[in-house]
Length: 254
Length: 260
Image 1 (cartoon, rainbow over the protein chains, first blue to last red):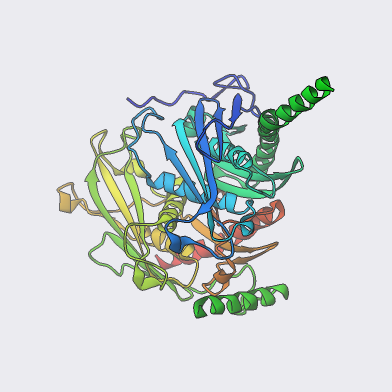
Image 2 (cartoon, helix red, strand yellow):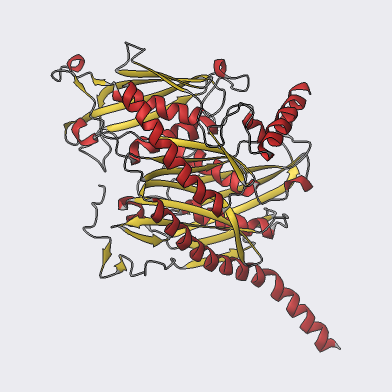
């Protein structure tokens, strides 16, 4: 049975899960979680649980897809049948096809694909559990997996959505806010040297005024900077500390 | 490859004109091509329209039949939008199941209609939870000279505006006009670095498939946005295109309203 809409999505200035309007859900990021992939990442964003893997740069199959001037980027967003309340039929549906397309294009804009002519960089993201914002969680995970794979990029992609619920803009909407809100607007930003440079992905559906759209962009930028810090921390934890330990060991030996 | 060489020449030409703030067909940067709307051209359909946007041509036909509602909206009619990019329309279109481009096209057109609440879906309930009207919006591209998306959006709402609910055919009383209460309009711009070209034609698209679509309703609310293509968009350009799109949509909305 479908659940019915809660009477109010905002009670006493708080959201249903107790968050403030500009507060993200808890995020957990783990780097290099898969053995076979060239780069990988496990990420939780609220109840979303996603895994990203990067393969490549590698040979392109089928070969006619090769581009002699640059690498082709492929991105597959896929939801596990058990990831949502009602079982999702396996395989790509129209929604997944669209999400894969716009996410791929966001990465095309930041990966330095001219460095790898005739090759393919494959990004696969699997949604194990979905709870609104799965496309943003997947982009955040894929971005870290690309760094883990050593793929050169202009910067890091960081993604977050803003929704309008009960007339109020809220950061990183969860399921109820997404289902029953008035608008949903996912973003992805290119962040370089801890600074937001440009927009790599933008979508929106619902109803918002021009002014609200501009406010949503500001709110998303704030959220993206927080996620970016966590992405960086996760990458640093995986790579920089190992080196640090090595240096320490050398020092003790001496 | 001669096709590639030609595309490159076109690209250079478009870009060199653009450096002087001009377009290859003499339009202003924020100017649409001429719009022609021919409503009701398919009498077998419940509603239809042929739209010419410059040389781009799209036919949309509406078919309706009773069917089951979605469980989370038991008292509402259902809209199903589909797009076919048939090989007749372009040397690059291939027969077969819809690819990511036609899926995206259909979904963005659908979003404009759905999110503007252009159709009063509650008036399409026959028996709550059991039987509602299903509206099939089928987009058929005939000639792709660029910006199929906006041509399709115009054709879709034009067709819906002349749609009759075929109640008598299903023994459900007399036919009546589809309750349409808004005219959503999409405005697509090609992004070339820090510049934009509204309603790009095919030659202009040789710069790359870098577009931003902004759909609005009659209150100037934004109801859908889609960035499409592997490029980076600056905030300044995004802000500017919000204004440009609202302005253009008002003019197009008037044309659509007058033609139906």
